[in-house]
Length: 256
Image 1: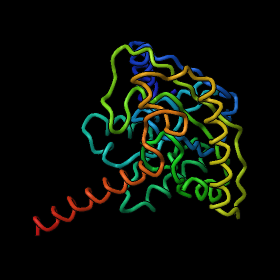
Image 2: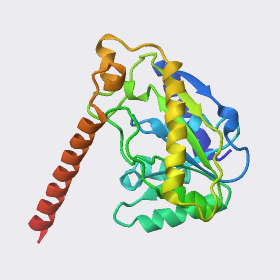
Image 3: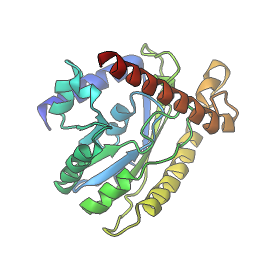
Image 4: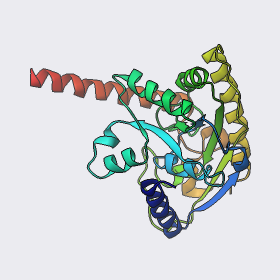
């Protein structure tokens, strides 16, 4: 076990115990004990990377997550992220992080990827990027599909964080590794593993306690909840992206 990663895992487990989080991990034996794999994870909460990593603990594996580079520049989280050998993603220069991820996969690492790129406000699966499929094909490793359900109740976009002792249950479901040929079509591979993740998400939801009252805001509209529909969530994401672009343009104009 690596000292930085093991220390962070120990701290995280203590934090989760303090919060009273109740984890159920389904299919954890599907995590390969050796060799590289691209772990693809759905994204409904800010702590998904910490929860998803738990699925690999029984197999004795550490997951190297791809995360936005801003986390690496923070004076506290930066050294920890680098110490755990996570991979920084600069959205303006994605080729560097892609190359680093492929190198790690070829070295036998499990690399964690959120193919939706951003948190799903609807708590449904959003459109998937094809990067995970392309990395798996180039490195000659399988896709390892993983879904998390319940993390949105701890801290998610548009809702206040709940970091006290909430006793929130979180279900993690791991599917069987999906082989990816070197000449595979990235679009076809992405559609294939997204379908598997959709099935896993149904399993995870079925194993979860019913949500009622105020917690209906964490339930998709398609399930009778009050979360935005996928279409509504997409419009909110587009509005946020447009606002970020305006701010960036204003900063450039001011600096010039």
